[in-house]
Length: 69
Image (cartoon, rainbow, N blue to C red):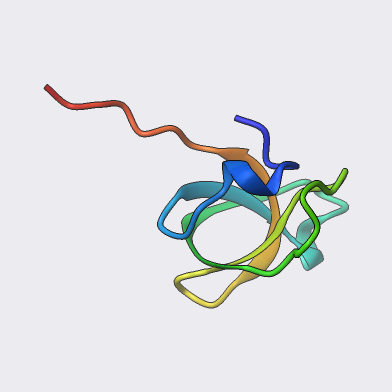
């Protein structure tokens, strides 16, 4: 799912973000969203979030949880 649209991201969502220090390398960090820091509805580089572990970065990918039966 697209990480550039704020409405797609909710606290508690599992996402992959790029940290500021990793922008050139493109290394992604996985975590759970605690807070949304970008206030605009859409951002071309990804919505900025704070993860539950305190790391801050821009969402590159939203991991959709598969429904367990």
